[in-house]
Structure formats: structure tokens, C-alpha cells
Image 1: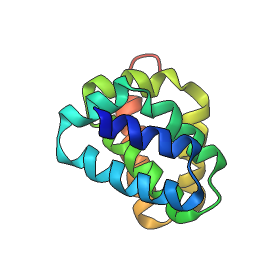
Image 2: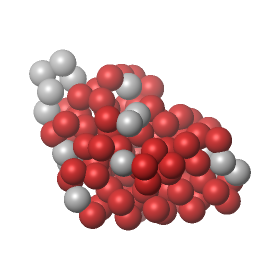
Image 3: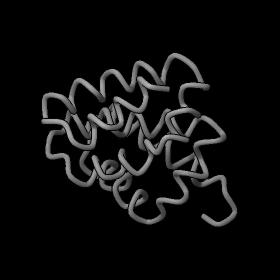
Image 4: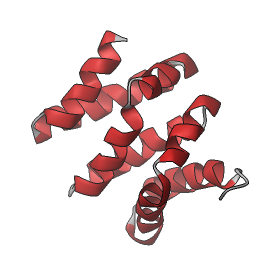
Amino acid sequence: RSLSRNLIARLQIGSSDSRATAIDSLLSLLNEDDKNVTIAVAQGVVPVLVRLLDSSSSSDMKEKTVAAISRVSMVESGKNNLLAEGLLLLNHLLRVLDSGSGLAIEKACIALQALSFTRDN
């Protein structure tokens, strides 16, 4: 839990190098176990990731952020938090479909597919 909190804080207030290291570490943590995803979501990682998509100018950072969002979308408890971000998240994911790299497009599709299974969407 403390590692997750630390990474989220570094993504919010760190330098660009610190953010790049933090997103790599966060991806590793999220890919280890669904429980880690649930903990990160409970600690507020989703709004931080959406803000990163909004502010990041680096295509590598956007790709990794979309990969993290995609991973969150694969865990049932994370879907509601992604839905709470609403149109802002959907617009960012759609922009990735238009101008992202192959891996980013694939990850955006995974997240969009998970979000499309709800009746509201």
C-alpha cells in the first residue's frame, strides 16, 4: 500500500524523470496481481492517470499511461472508477485511437471495450 501511495504521489508532483520512473514501477506493480490494482484504485490512481493523459506531451508516457488504464479496466473493481471519469477519459482514449502507436491503440481498445460493457455507455 505504501509503495502504491508513493508512486501515485510521484506521478502527481514529481519531475518528468520521476514520473517516467514512477509509471514504469506502477505498471510493474499493477501487472503483478489484481489485488495491487484494487489497492491502487482505492488510493486514487485513476484520476491521476487521466490527468497524466491530459498533461503528458511524451508519446512514451501516454502509451504507458494507457497501458495502466487498460490494466485497471481488466479488474472488475476498477471499472466503476474508470466510468466515474466519464467523457474526459473516453475522449483521451479515442484520441489515442487516432494518433497513438500500435501498442497504445491496442491498450486503448481494451479499456474502451471494458467500458462499453456497461449499460450506461
